[in-house]
Length: 159
Picture 1 (cartoon, rainbow, N blue to C red):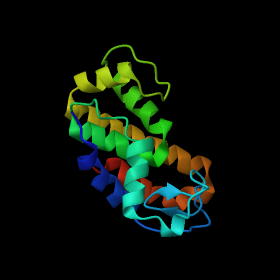
Picture 2 (picture 1 turned 45 degrees about the horizontal axis):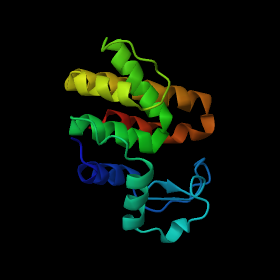
Picture 3 (picture 1 turned 30 degrees about the horizontal axis):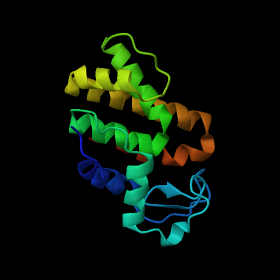
């Protein structure tokens, strides 16, 4: 089964440290933890250990996956874009004809079953392509965030 300890370093490597970019809709962030999502926290003084605790408690739902690679990638994108990443995973599964699956953005037993049955390499290629398209669409729809597009695309195709 996939292990949080193996996935978290990858996520934190992508999230980086403290930022207070006025163009970031999340506002002040540290280790990817945003003030918008956690208004009660002092984001500037958040430690790496605090961030790890939050990610394990609030974001790690992928321990039932047999592929560490898939679990890490889907987790990383879940941290970055929430339910949108789950929807993209479900769309990728549907495209690969892994069986009937509803792309509702909700992670549950059916999505997990299909992720455990899919060909890892094919899924990763399709998932990354769909993430890249999602980020391009988001950049086009939100011109104020278009400056982040290259970073999003680098993250989408990594792993």
